[in-house]
Image 1 (cartoon, rainbow, N blue to C red):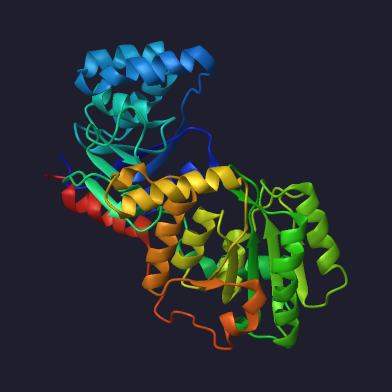
Image 2: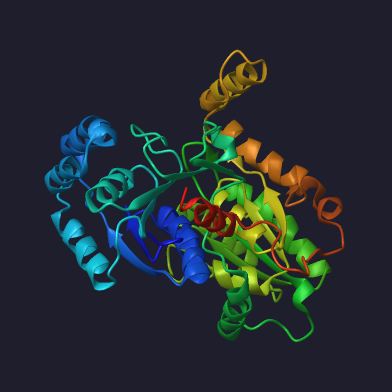
Length: 391
């Protein structure tokens, strides 16, 4: 048995955010141990078949031996996954407990557990998978705002891990600047990034919000002679994108407006490498974590709420949790994410911006962390897995 994983299988359920989390942890494990990383897509059944396999039959996976796990994998359409894993293990002469199966989210978690059982290897889940929970996994990494259970196999993190590697940011920033050059008058401290999210069950980014919130940022950037780099997400509505284009048209300070609906290129790593200040909407929890990991000065932009009724129910639940009438695991929606933002703010990782008081909110000083990022949960997760590998 090796002291650290010699091979990491990163299983993907097709959700970009989940894959990005896994790549962060797998990338750091590879850097520390020299382990190869193999990415595999898991089957994605729908409808009744998904319910039958993931909600019912997956309940029995924790008690299954290797043969039982093989049968579940085959029934779930994962025979090719099992064959590929066996080939990769054999090619590297990997013995028992020398490889790690890793995934984020509930869609890939049953395959992660089953493949580890079937091949005699170890497994790790990022976030708490539904049905299975964290107990069956050798390693479980859960954000503290999800109130994970206290256990030796659980690591509580401040936000989710991500695939931001600080030593690559300078190159990624330089590459973005080649496509969208900054003005010669500004320096690194005068480049601002604006990450605009979009609509989901809790948050709303409307054209009116764009006008009210981003207009003052554009004005402040012009007064500071800053270069602005702006991008949207796939959830940004056409109306909000149209208003953003209208606001930025002809503005010489705006060096880039990249709409996710029009261009598949992901500029976020380059923006984090190029810009000193990052403004990010509260719906984009992953982008908040990425900006913090990059060591930039991060400003949180509050958005509109999707439903007053839904928000009221969430606040009622949060009140009962604060009064200890409900467990913290019952927290949901906006209050759950607010708990993360409060933790980040209390530790100096981000500041909140009120667009009606923008100039006093952001001030004039720029805080770049000279010694690199002060928060890197993917790196800490990899170190924790290595420390516990032989236990």
